[in-house]
Length: 536
Image (cartoon, rainbow, N blue to C red; front, side):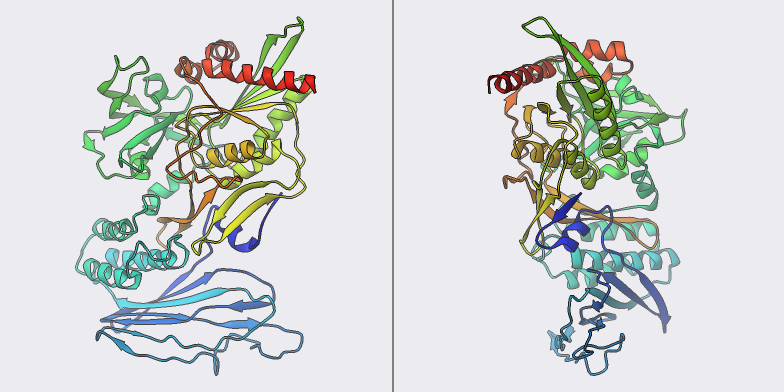
């Protein structure tokens, strides 16, 4: 269990898999569409508060209504229902002949009010039915960005005016694809590659859990923020991509002959997935692990298969101590932070404890992240007390520490965490929490450097909006974004490919672990820790 200080509800919302709930109801009148939003910001059993704003543009009107509802013991100073009579005063004034705002309101005080917003936007309805549907999606996306995007300046632009501009550009269109492109264009002006919209099909692919099956080639990919290129973070063990020799760091150039310039990771993943038994042709720019002799562009035909996604691999490494007795090190490799990651990790540690394991190696190499909550839950398997796991920075610049509550670790044995340039997001949160709290030594290479947190909201048409709602700092207040985490001890992963691709059965897994130079370095660090413990 963990808590958020000082603002529990707000930070917990940022760390959930979906943003605060919204709903949008359409009303048609005289060729116009009115879209009402009900956006829950905070919740409380006793009260409800919302915000009022009004924006009037040519053929476009945006209204949002602030309401307070509370049940105070005295009944003084609060409305007992949602009525706003005598509560909100509207004052309008023209700005440049276009914009009028109603900015006056009377705020009522209640004990512990909950915050909710009802937003209404009216706009000219497109005659093309599919474009009209995307208009509604546009307003939904715009509203969510307006309330939750981590940069309150929206990259130093007028966000209300951006809605008007995008709506004008969308109105004459005749296809949904073209209309969606306008939404993507609007989002791109925010200057954040992680805030984006994905189609309903792409969102369904995203929702595939780690305990299910997918039909594809087994690649984890991401857009490299600086170059904008699609790069491979890792391959699922035994998948078609792994068997074809595709490695982390390789750049995807084409899929089935179509260039990937400007294509986001979800769109690329959708192209890679398909019916098992079909073939997808991928052109990759590979960086050779042998110093460049095998570098270059190559084309690979990959069969799509049913790929089982399992985030955890475990093994027990036996080695002889100087005094001759056999010692055991538990090896746990976590490939993604799924809904089941913490439960599987807990079961694995308990099992290895029964086998007398005396130290642990947690391998987060090429783990691209996943659910932030899963990363926080895994941290608590290894730590005690009320330690800070991560610090979130909200859109107002407030720092919100996420703390454990009466944590009880399953083991206090020495721990080394392996990381590399493919360790991102939740992997970096976990590595930072264990390192900064003195629980683990980090071995490997500098991590990816993704220090932003996204919420995911399903929109009315089944598409989804990813919004960066916060950035985070490690417990020691280290900024990770575009910087990464530098490990305590560097290692050269001479046999890393063998270690990844051979972990199919216990015999080949043990052979790979014994020849992985980073694991050798980790074992040496564990010996140092154990010797210090014996000396004390």
